[in-house]
Image (cartoon, rainbow, N blue to C red; front, side, top):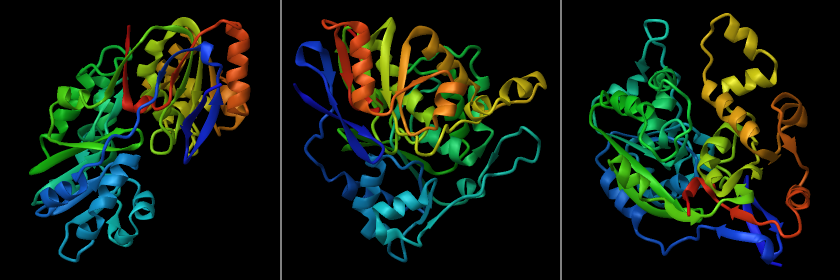
Length: 364
């Protein structure tokens, strides 16, 4: 019986499935290392500011490799959306990282940029790209806007007339974000492409298709069941990010089939709309005509429940995951996989995806 280790938060959880039950396995493996961190440090040496947009493993690896050079007194100013995570990964930068208060637009509902984005000097934004059903790919440009441009999420959602999930397809929402970043002077956008939880390549100011081609492509025939890990800490911190990053892997399961999603969700639900739904406030707010951030997450969750039998392995309180959001839950990977195998039968076949955030799954 093969042992399959799937990232779950900061650790890995063991999943055991009989070899005859495994239809296909998509398990990205680290590739030979490069001098990407040194090249990044060289390219960023004349920057006035570096903005670390996320805390994904490949982003932290890139920053950690360049930390000794970034930490010098003459180095660029450093801003982060998750300074504690960056400092934990690169102790040399402790005390050097700043957070940015959210900008306040002059007009209610208007767009406003954090002043540091519009300041003089070259600015470098660093992030790990990931699949996303709203943007196609959430890259450094998208994450820079979501972190530091007020109401950018509203503009992105409003750019689409429907909420059909379209991972890896360039969308109007992505175009809206690209238009916003054009107003940031002297900006460069660096995407740290991962493979097997490690940094594989660095793309600077790359077009959408170049970033898309950086993902591991795997053809998978749909099976009765799918076991999917999002990618561990940095990807599965919230339910919202987990669903969005794992959506592309659903190509590997038949409609009406069973999906086991493994996502720690240590930081909770991660979406205003999901939080309001879990606390029973969403419908009242929508009836008042209030604008709720993250309504697409509600659409994705409803689509998951309608099209698949979803079993969630997470650290979320059961009262939220099960009672409020309508998801079946399990207390461990053994219980989760066992229940799915009991449902699909002794000869049932299961597709396995260990790091969905790193993959582009295509139907074969």
